[in-house]
Image 1 (tube, rainbow, N blue to C red):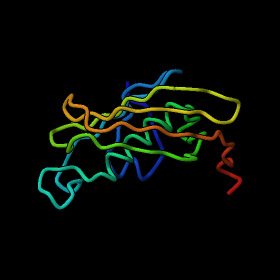
Image 2 (cartoon, one colour):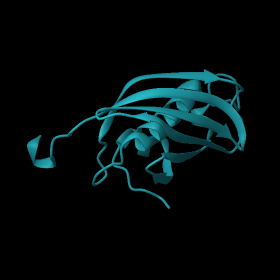
Image 3 (tube, helix red, strand yellow):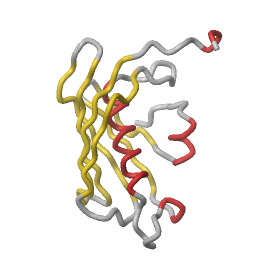
Image 4 (cartoon, rainbow, N blue to C red):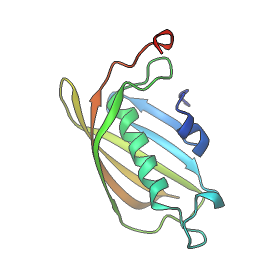
Length: 133
């Protein structure tokens, strides 16, 4: 299952939403050379953090008509191993859900190996309609 997203940045990076339900979200990114840091073959930590944030954000609140319904309040990531391989994936799940704030966690893997662990808090928002801009 692939979910349509309108986020231009996610689309630019090539992030695909693989699965989403009320408990969390799984996203994937095919690794390519332009995502490496200065060490050949190692994915830049910012890419890893972005992937975790996308998984947590999508898991915190489903997009409506391709538009996000929450924003990141804070996030933290711990890098455990260099991300080297073919595919980077992040799987998130809800830790605590309140009326307006949702606490999430995500595990980021590269070809099945755990490379990072993240937590984040997300706030629900009511984005403006397309005609309201």
